[in-house]
Amino acid sequence: MTSRREAVHDILRKSEGFRSAQDVYAQLRSAGAKIGLTTVYRALQALADGGKVDVLRTDDGESVYRACATDTHHHHLVCRKCGHTVEVAGPAVERWAEAVGAEHGFTEVTHTVEVFGTCSGCSTSARS
Amino acid sequence: MTSRREAVHDILRKSEGFRSAQDVYAQLRSAGAKIGLTTVYRALQALADGGKVDVLRTDDGESVYRACATDTHHHHLVCRKCGHTVEVAGPAVERWAEAVGAEHGFTEVTHTVEVFGTCSGCSTSARS
DNA sequence: GCGATTTTGACAACCATTTTCATTTCGCGG
DNA sequence: CCGCGAAATGAAAATGGTTGTCAAAATCGC
Ligand SMILES: [Mn+2]
Ligand SMILES: [Mn+2]
Ligand SMILES: [Zn+2]
Ligand SMILES: [Zn+2]
Image 1 (tube, chains in turn blue, yellow, orange, purple):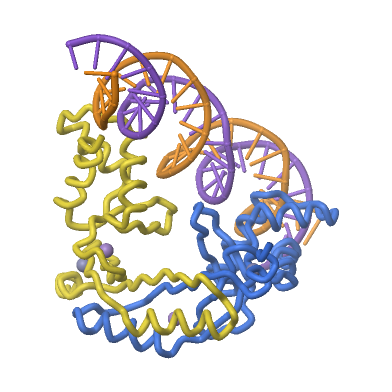
Image 2 (spheres, rainbow over the protein chains, first blue to last red):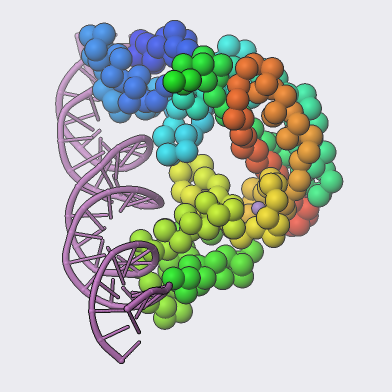
């Protein structure tokens, strides 16, 4: 019941940045694992529901997943070119989101924050 | 060259919250306008590229659009229940995003920030 | 063991969005 | 007004990530 789910989780834990479902599936298959794409999707969804992995949607609408290094609330700084990701805490953002919500009478305030950029590695190798 | 694009923009301006492309298309057609779905998509994209409207992706992957009241960079405080949206400026967030990017050697830093909550109207009417 | 429940996966269906491509409209100098 | 190249339009088909279906297989409770 967890063997495949575990396998999916493992892939994410051994990965650097965010991975797509199709991507994880391809790697599992090329490693000889007998698993279906449907199961990979279900595993990722279960992991996301359980807070084990982060999900974010790319600009072209693909969901990408990443095992979180920490289990506390945080945000991501993602390289647009290579997907390299840094987890960042943002006390300033947390306070701002709460404040702006309260200021307008909103309750149960949550927020999504993602920062994108070009990492130093990619901006170096781009110099032609 | 702008008649249809203008029609699309008008729909958004007269709308309260965010609207989907299909949604805008349906309204235009039922109002008797001769316009294709493809053109609606292209118009929305052009408007978004030109900073005339905001785009955000719903959880189920649909893109929704809204005419901006202001043409400066801002973020949204969206009611989870009714979709009521408040545009908010966030100098604190802007600074934070820039700083966190720079701190990790990232360049060309952009960010996406959305705040969700339950608006005062909805939390009042929810008291049973 | 054995029936009930859950999980799995091949395949088909979904559906918003994009591509294609032929037609229409627009811009504009002559 | 004409004519012509560029841009816009839209019907239809393709795309592609994701979800639904359903029968077979694994797992669990006892
Ligand atoms: Mn946060
Ligand atoms: Mn806006
Ligand atoms: Zn990079
Ligand atoms: Zn509301």
